[in-house]
Length: 172
Image (tube, one colour):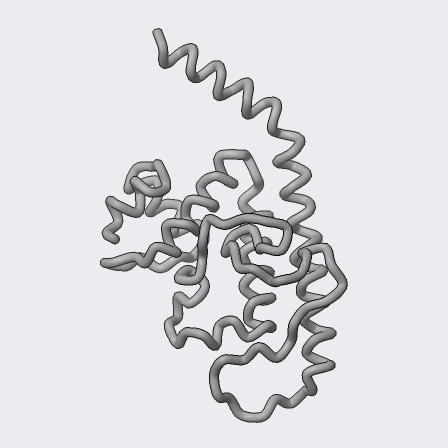
């Protein structure tokens, strides 16, 4: 999809989308895969909900790191592998931004190490050691996720009141 279609999918203008891309280090392209629209939409929504940019950036970095530790990046050789896998799906076992299904709860005590889909040279560390690091990455991700989730829960009444007010103004 072109930038105009990407902006329409996110419900924002092209300049707004380009600004969000710049803020969060997303590449600008001629044609965007569907996953880019899902990620961009989530970044826009978090921004509209007044989640601080530093928290969104931290969530994005930790989510990428966790998926790299789980070797999800080995599915694609593209540099935008993360953006390509993004989906709007949500649930207790899915990461917030990518929608990737961990097959375990985000607040859980286990991850599935060794899901490497590409041939690589032998790792320096064993799968057990990598699982421990992946569990640490999951816990770090869960901490910023819970912070953002708490802020969203706290902001629901104000957001609902703002939407109702905007509807009344728009109906004039």
